[in-house]
Image 1 (cartoon, rainbow, N blue to C red):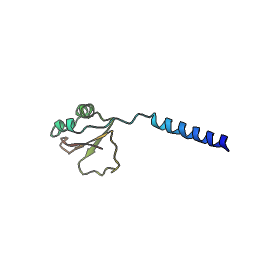
Image 2 (image 1 turned 120 degrees about the vertical axis):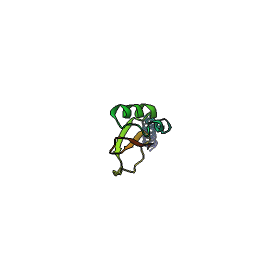
Image 3 (image 1 turned 180 degrees about the vertical axis):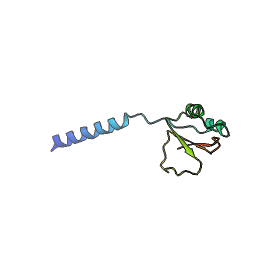
Image 4 (image 1 turned 45 degrees about the vertical axis):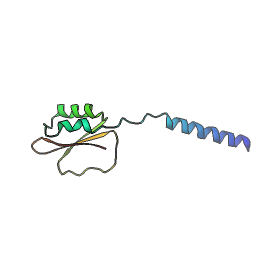
Amino acid sequence: MKKTLAVVAMSMALIGASSNAQTPPSACEPKPGQAFVGGPATQQTGMQIQAATGATIFQWVFEGSPVTKDYRRERVRVVYNRDMQVLSVTCG
């Protein structure tokens, strides 16, 4: 019985260690992205927004389009209109 408990305890320790070893994704910082609001919605602007915010996931969203409500700390969303103008830059 003691041997079984020792094996279970060691297994649990290894599982805990492996889950802690993962590096969390970088958090998006929305403030630097605000400088792009009102500017053109181009591929170059998108790359600049992603670099400025530190996001690892980038998403263009056409004004009024439905989006998922799940929160992703590493995602930046850029809303644009039919005039190809950036309306908002948000993280999450």
